Length: 133
Image 1: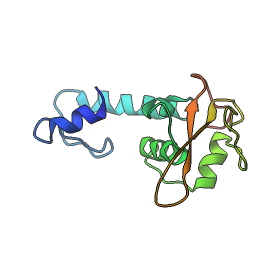
Image 2: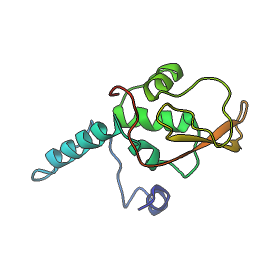
Image 3: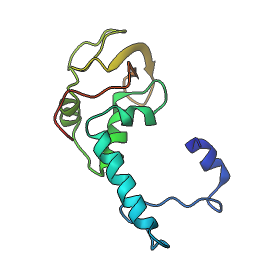
């Protein structure tokens, strides 16, 4: 179910919790959630999984925030780009910006309070050629 649909349902229907600070749960539900979170974090450390949690086109900042939310760790822009093998410098539309040819620069930009941010898309479901997160 899309996050927007959940948000529209209102707080009286759904309650969101930090997965690292869950309330007491019945049966073995806490263990099931712990195992699921561990699996997501593990897969996200070497695959494009976080990319698929974003819209079809996204900024590198949005991708970085997604990784940070998954791992519960804030990193600098340079560290994030280094971990994913993202090239620094000019990015041409249609070109891959990472060593594994997964993130493709588009010719679209998203405006903001500062200079517009280039939008990217995922080339294919694959694995990043890099060390674990």
